[in-house]
Image (cartoon, rainbow, N blue to C red; front, side, top):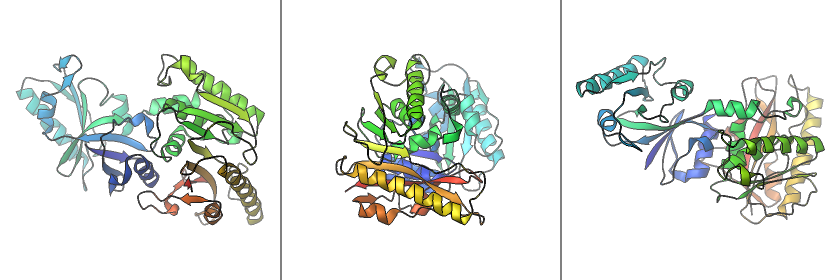
Amino acid sequence: MKYLAVLGRLSDISLAELTAQFGESVKKIAPNLAVFESNKTININRFGGTLKFGKLISENPVDYLLNLNTSDGAFSGKFVIGVSDYSKGARKFKSQGEALKIKKILARQGRSARVLQNNDAALSTATSHHNQMGEKDGHVEFLKVGKEWYVLIGVQNITAYKNRDQARPARDAKVGMLPPKLAQILINLCGPLPEGSRILDPFCGTGVVLQEALLDGYTAYGTDLSDRMIEYSEKNLEWLTEKENSSFAVAQGPATAKNLFLLSVGDATNFSWDKKIDAVACETYLGAPMSQPPVEIKLKEQKQECKSIILGFLKNISGQIDSRTPLALAVPAWLRPNGHYERLNILDEIKDMGYNVLKLNHLSQEDMLYFREGQIVAREIIVLRKR
């Protein structure tokens, strides 16, 4: 089956995430688009870097709608339709025109439809999400790329991301705020893992990676140097697993989910993890919070401190994980006055410790930078395999 992915703002990282899960069939066809082949069931709620997924259809949009079935049989209600045109040179009026043409043909068949208004050639993620496109019976969005038509099978649930980021009971802005989307990306960069695999976050903080691991059907193992962070993680994971009827409930159900995470206080540079680790996904130590680019002497101090902790962790865990174990790390990079980011430049030391640094979809390490515009401390993502 051929799929279309509408990539997020940092499209190279989104592309790497897809490649880690679906292999080299993933091809970037435009700055914000990729296609790939897969026989897997695609669940957009597990992909932090993708805004929309579409499935290629062989028939024209009208025939697709007229043949639309639901769990109760053929759909006979009013359609809500939208057209997002991602073709090169696409314009708003063309997308709207395509949708209106579909509506007119449906009307001649005795079927009614409401057309979503486009503010651009493609419907925004927010518009698609809030109109439940691809989720509610008869709410169908078509994605057009050249002569190919795809039907939307999933749109990023921006409401759920916001809620599980901001509604958690224990948050601490002083230690940084790892976005749930990035946590998902880090987990996915470890590659396809069997359900129930144990994901370790040795710098777990308030438990964002751990919560995303649980939501994805994995078991979670978190350690942190700070007693307070372990206390916060425990509160947040208990809150997550108690939401029995909410969108946060993990696939295994809240009754068993409480048994699926383990937390311990420990220094990542010398801790002995007593459970088998299937993958490591974490934001490492990023140094001191900063509101402006650091002066050179301060930057040198921060780089040395971060490098010592990160390399110390990798040396420590090397003897505790099996060969081929995947690790996805977010390490710091600092904004300089010239607008560029200065990195730790630790890849050579990492390779000398017995790790392979992976390149996904032929992306260079320079492409693996996660940041908001003007952010002082960015995150460079490094994907490893233990040799």
